[in-house]
Length: 385
Image (tube, rainbow, N blue to C red; front, side, top):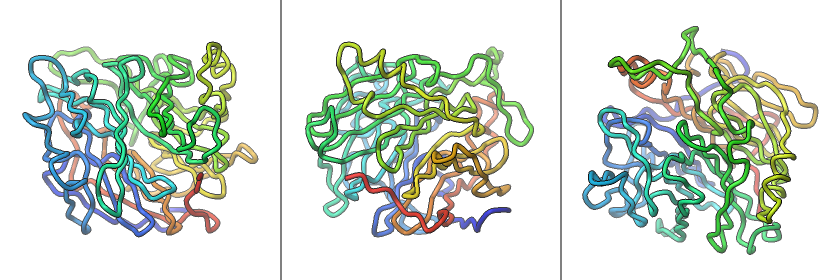
């Protein structure tokens, strides 16, 4: 181990699906999610609050985690209940200490088939942590969340004077679909209006023929059962806002590059805005293969480095990449959460060992674990509001 102390915080129940997201409130409450779209097994819940080092309880309270008849409509596609959670990929707590739940609206069948979504499935849900109740539900139209989109991660800027907003803030979301069009989704939290930018731009797409390795093993999409082996094609996944909110950083998993784009270009939805957004993309650095990204109050961008069992930082001030921590327990770092307690939290879910990558054989070893480590230089969570 190098860099700083890494502390395990939570080991998931044996019955749990692999953890994906983690969100930490200002009072230390921990929330996680379990995406049935990435695993052929079902679960009793797709969002939970972590209540001890080994236990969790479905969240929010009530039946929101239990769609009537289940998460699959066997006559068509994934279920499309707007008031229930279908396949949550990300949970994030904003600067006002509200929990936001990003639902892909997609689930996998037992044979690994990832079903397309239907309107009402893909959505962004806001939860008040004091009352533990839903305060906002934003549904994405099929022209924003395509049936084969996979809405992956989200970041928030709650400043009231943002261009393109009605005063309640903006959300930025990555679409990491392996089947469809990758891009960035922008949401005006006040009106609920949403739009896309950088559709199929090279910066949001998997690099053609890209191959990665973890622990020296080359990874492919390999379902087994005589199915063809092909490169992994994860598009734009990790996402982070600069500390001043003026730049959005993002990266495809199937790439080693970090990209940035001015957020003002993304908030513009005029006739020529897509051309201007695409022309404003910056290729910033090679930082290794990453899943999630996050920012601290000093402006550092954190990312996993899956091929080196480490977490790196990118410093926008001088363009350098440094090792934050290296540890053999770091394998597939999925999602980060920077908290007001001065720590960065992250999930390790062994995604590279799932059956779809290992010839149809699930090689994951439970438990899946949540870790944390202190931030660099006394940093804390960014507060854009």
